[in-house]
Picture 1: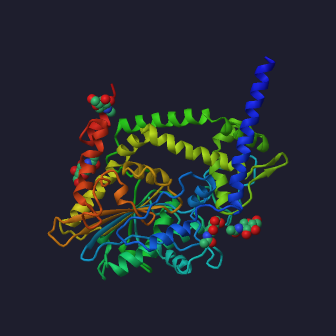
Picture 2: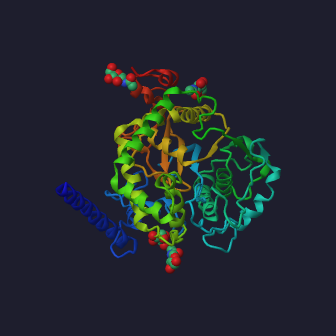
Picture 3: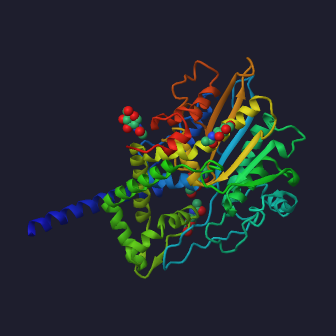
Length: 483
Ligand SMILES: *[C@@H]1O[C@H](CO)[C@@H](O)[C@H](O)[C@H]1NC(C)=O
Ligand SMILES: *[C@@H]1O[C@H](CO)[C@@H](O)[C@H](O)[C@H]1NC(C)=O
Ligand SMILES: *[C@@H]1O[C@H](CO)[C@@H](O)[C@H](O)[C@H]1NC(C)=O
Ligand SMILES: *[C@@H]1O[C@H](CO)[C@@H](O)[C@H](O)[C@H]1NC(C)=O
C-alpha cells in the first residue's frame, strides 16, 4: 500500500514538473524572451518567390498553443499578403466564390460566477482597431432598408450596437477584419481583374448568410470592402438555415452517424488526458462550482475572448485562472486535431456534410463556363462548423482551425485554348492551397499553368469524394448501412 502511494506521488510529481517546464517555455515565448517562429519571415520568404508557387501554410512543426491562439484571434495589426487573383498572364478570371467565418465575436458562454469580459460592441471609428472605411461603412449600413431582404433576415440588426456586448455579438474587431478582407478582394478582383462589369446588377452577386447577426454583419462588412458604397437595390441577402449550407439536400443519416462517432472519439481522448482533467478541477475550485458545471460552460471560448482582447483572465478570492490553464486546454485541442485526422471519422462526416455545398459550387462554375453571366461573385457567410468540414473534405487536414474572419476562396479561370480550357484555384486565408487538396495533389504544378484543371475538381465532387464509402454518389453514401 505504502509503496503504491509513493509510486503514485512520484508519478504525480513528474507530471507536475513536466507541466511546469512546458508552461515555463510557453510563458517565455509569450513574453518574447525566446523567439517563436516569426510570421514575418514566412511572408518575406514568400514575397521573393514566383507567384504561381503556393506558400507553405503549415509553419511550426511543433504546435505552440500560444502561437496558435494568436493565429486564431487574427488581430488586425499587420498587413497580410494575399494570393487571390494571381495567375499566369493570358488566363481570364471567370468567377469567384468565397466562404467566410464571421469575425471576432463576444463569447457564446460565460464562466460561472465570474465577471464577463468588458467589451464594448458599439462601433467607434477612432477606437482601435479601426479601418479607414469604418465610418463610411457605418453610415452606409443605416440605409440598409433600401435593399431586398429575405423575410427571415429583415429583422436582424445590420450593425453591432451594445455598449456591453451581448453573447455572440460581433465586435468592432470583427467588422474591421472583414472590411480588410473585402478591401483585399476589391483590389484584386474588382480593380485588377474587373470581375464585375461596370454597371453590375443584382444578378451578378449571390449572397447567403445564416440567421445570426454576426454572420450577416460580417458578410455586409466584406461586401462593403469589396464594393464600397454599393447600391442597396442591387443587393439581396438570402437566408441559409443550415449551418453546413446543405440547402435542400440535408437528409443524410450516415452523416449523423459519423458525427456521433466523432463525438465519442473526442470524449474518449479527452478523459484520457489527466493533465486536462486536473486543470478543469483547479479552475472549478477557483471559480467555486463543480468541475462538471465548469466544463459544460466551455471556458476556453470565454478565455479566448480574454486572450484576443488582452483582458486579464478572471480572478476570485480563491485565485486566478491563468495562462497555464489556458495553454493546457489549447494544447489538448491541438492533440485532438491530430487524433481526429488519424481516426478519419470527422473526414467522413465532412465529405457528406459538404457535398451539397460543393455540388452547388461546381454547378455555379459550370453555368458560368457555359457563358451565363450570373452570380460572378458569390459570398457565403458562415461559422467555424461550416468552414472546418469544408477544409477537411477538400483534404486540407494540415490547415489551421478556422480563425476569426477566415475565408476559403474558389476561383474559376479560363485558359487561352478553347471554352473547355478551365481551371480552379483554391485559397485559404489568402494562401494558395490548390495543390494541397486531395484531388489536385498528384497534379504537377510544374507541368501546367500552375492551376488545377477544373475537371479534377468536378470529378471529385461528382464521384470520387464517395470512394471512401465504396460508393459513387451522395444518396447511396448517405443511406448505406455499415455491416
Ligand atoms: C500583432 O499582435 C500580436 C499579439 O499581440 C503580436 O504577437 C504581434 O507581434 C503583433 N504584430 C505586429 C506587426 O505588431
Ligand atoms: C495588454 O495589456 C497590458 C496591460 O494590461 C499592456 O501593458 C500591453 O501593452 C497590452 N498589449 C497590447 C498588445 O495591447
Ligand atoms: C447536384 O447538382 C445537380 C445540378 O447541378 C443536381 O441535379 C443534384 O441534385 C445535386 N445533388 C445534390 C446531392 O445536391
Ligand atoms: C469498402 O469495401 C472494403 C473492401 O470491400 C471494406 O474493407 C470497407 O470496410 C468498405 N467500406 C465501407 C465504408 O463500407
